[in-house]
Length: 350
Image (tube, rainbow, N blue to C red):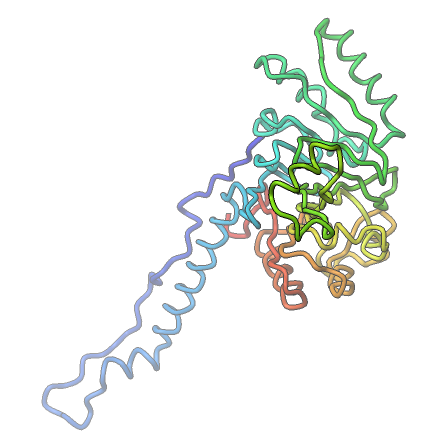
């Protein structure tokens, strides 16, 4: 589901004020009393008014671009979707044919073959039956949906209810994938869940690229010798897993302190929640509700080894401008590129 925010032309900041300063024309007969137009403008504050208006115009253009942007490009991945705290979360990576959580099933998610569910709150899982039904409608192959093992039975019941209510087939491969387990999405991509901390059972996911590397003891061999070893059944390569993308879902910042979650913090791209951004909500409030406060991410910034961090799941109380300012706070603390996912958020200029 794509959100567009109509911006009325009447909201455009006015570049030139409607009133004009009263600049008197100097008498032609008295050269000593001549006042230059520039000095007159300066004393009237006219130039400063123009400068302020231009600054406001630039802020407006930035805000409008942020509101209408449909995704970000990070480390070779196009990442798009919606993530508004308490409303909807569905983050899509077309290159991996996957969506993290399904939200209300935005249309862009239907083309993705894999869905990773982090937990069972409706703003993350509510669109699941619609996602599966839509793929059937478009004759797409049944999707593979990953869930925490503790909710698999209930998710199956959910689909059974919709099959009964709608008298329809809902075909899918439902996979209960636990923390520490590995699933091969394709021959060069695997996924592993990691532990997160929400008010109900939850988990994040790390997607790894897979490549094979010749074992050290065989590096000195020539091609024919290596081929002979392969034919004899000798395993001549090591499998190297490189964390590409990590997605936390809803969680407190506690996940950052768990050594077993190190891969999430060294993946090329970390997609992490930052529900609260300012002093309007305390860290304690964030923790009680199973969420992360931006100041906690800043506090633990030393553990971030990612090349890019995508912040998501902001509270709907914030404007795009608030989010942008918050990003600057974190950016100054880390070498990673920090970007917010702002689709669906309003600008104060809108």
